[in-house]
Image (cartoon, rainbow, N blue to C red; front, side, top):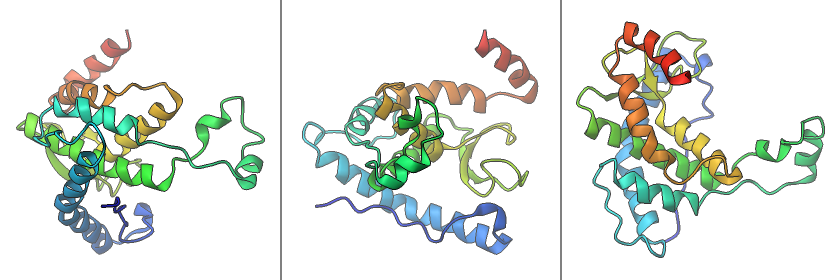
Length: 203
């Protein structure tokens, strides 16, 4: 069975969407999630060495999923157009080549599962749609929120960034697993605790 990539319901430009369109996207995401998780499970099981992976929504399950994901990520092949668009970039221009379509789709699936792991692990976590402020990066997107709704985790974006890191060697296969403790602490924090947490994490 070949992998069935995700098809977004529209060319999503969240800041230009009407309230009804944002609601339609939220409904689409939540309705699509069960089938995407089934596709992810099949995709993993069809890969040699991963037929026994268990989608039990445990943090531990992210370790082997991360190993599988590391073997699936790829960047889009360079074209003449790609070369011309990166001529003015620095020596790290290769890191800015886009991920290929199947990697982006798999990152979306993996991100959905990461969100489900967060919800299964932390009773306070849940899916929500970010609807303010409008200038925020996650506006309109589906995120995980906890005790303080001003702090949110975007699992599909995180999985995409991990995919970039896996292709250039800056991230390892255990990065998905590491996200659980990091974001669990953040989502369980009050605003005053968050203000103390950020400089602590940087030190």
